Amino acid sequence: MPPSGGGEVPAASSVDKAIVEPTTVSSAASEAGASWAQPSLQWSQSSPAGGVAADAARPSVLSVGVRLKGEFACAGPLHVEGTVEGAVHGPEVLIGPSGSISGDVDSSKLSLKGRFNGRAVCGEVVIGPQARATGDITCGSMTLARGAVLEGRVSIGVSADDA
Image 1 (cartoon, one colour):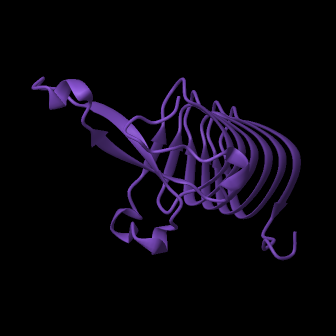
Image 2 (image 1 turned 180 degrees about the horizontal axis):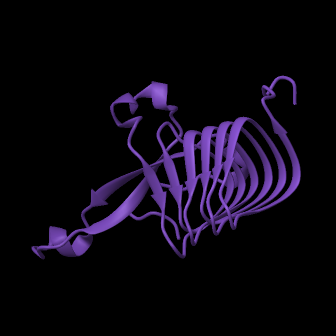
């Protein structure tokens, strides 16, 4: 759904890194005297160093029912309860119990309580008791809880440059 309020969503192929900034945009009804405003999302192509540094460490949450495709970069932690298909880059990625990522994860820390299928290059990986990870994982350290499922190739203690 395109954002309201005049902003345009760039085509997925033209976005290397998109930052979604929530704002409130007044609708025609509020301008006519109604006491409500319609929330919307405004897209910014700026990098975190390009003007949103004050919000850089704020967590981002993809809720249940949200489905995203593409490449995503977050300056702060990312909590996924929805579905992501593509690449995720950020300092900390948490895949919650109802969340899933199919694609690549590049992060200092990956905490998995849901499902992951793809390639991960992380400093630390924590796979919880009900989680399922399939693919190639390269990390400095890994914690695997009883009841977790891990299928694929795992390299522990190997830097990303050696992978």
